[in-house]
Image (cartoon, rainbow, N blue to C red; front, side, top):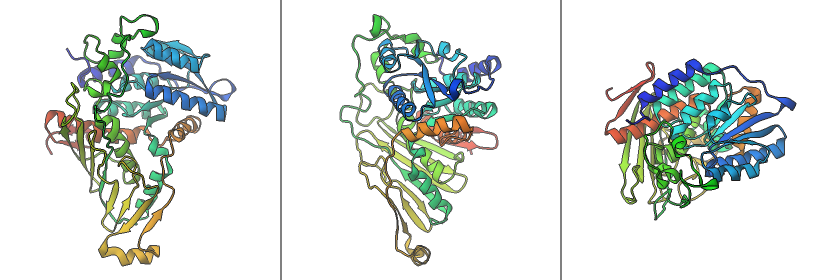
Length: 426
């Protein structure tokens, strides 16, 4: 029986909510925030390094606990933080009474269970995108984060860049008129198959000794039980049990900024299309994928990506009066600026307002991941909403998760925001 079903999640999360500790924490000795890390692969180890840099610059926190099921990764992380205690099981790490916050960078299928467990124990959480694997999980995580008044930051670093806050200002000033469409991409061309560049250690596995040991059963967790498969472990994004493929790995980066800049709301209609057109290497998820959605504020969203062609849709916010060219984050080229260009029927009105035929917003760039981590630590102290907070992340997840489900089930989904349920009939 497949344990990772949505029904299984709802059953187990109800039990967890009824039994867990949910008292709020008080920041500890010397006013320092005590953090733990769960999942220390490529992304988790990067977050650890950035947090070490944050600590060196701010002297406001400590890394006290590290967890991973792969002994080699855990050992490498411990070498970076030798004062931290190490764990194979995240359940044991979360049982500590001295933690204030935790970073989660596991495969997608563990995001919801671990996040819920951490929230229930009174911890603030930085969880890598996607927020969850399934829509039902996102709904529950958002609900509990709000109820427990915990800080939950989802790892979409672009939401802490000045670029998308400037885009939000342009939309709110009415320069575009009424927005009718957002479009974008996250494309790249990997001839041997995206995610296959994740190196496989041939000696690692459940039978591996010492640093080669992987606790496969713990890694699988709620997913379907199966014999160890190195490709599934090291390249998990290729498989539905642990990932939503392009949508959860890449489209989340594009949809979330549009929710910040235009309107954060659940979509009303969602569709996902695509397939394995090039990289038929045993993967289950598409190498080319389209997320499409309509929103109640009367605009549409289109995000089309491929892993076999790096040129995607130009990233635009299109309004009735003008278009915002957002600059290329993932289009295969970079502009370094945003610009607003009026539509022909409204050109004179635009010139009267702005004094020029087009508006250039300079110095738009990738500002890195540190600002997002800084924002998380700031919000732990102020209790303000972080830049990718639970409500925004949940509404983005509605578009992302239901586009995946649409593709897999061959159905279009409609979302009833009042009843908070997706259906296949309007």
